[in-house]
Image 1 (cartoon, helix red, strand yellow):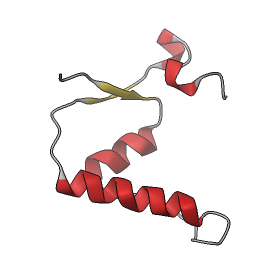
Image 2 (tube, rainbow, N blue to C red):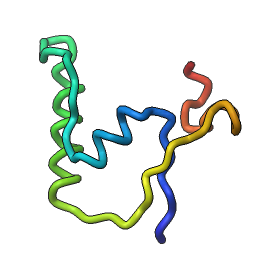
Image 3 (spheres, helix red, strand yellow):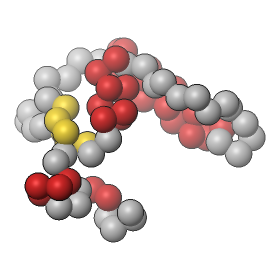
Image 4 (cartoon, rainbow, N blue to C red):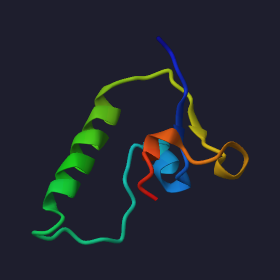
Length: 72
């Protein structure tokens, strides 16, 4: 089933489209798990194809993205 994927993050959308994470953060003991997950995601993006559109969630027009689950 082909469904659009929404994100309210322009950075996240550009990372997925480029299949590359662009961050200024340095790996450390505290964030090593996060970088492992980013590496797995980039690997998946490079090894798989998807037809889903990646779209910008328009928070001002539509309200908070339900995927945020009130974490903002």
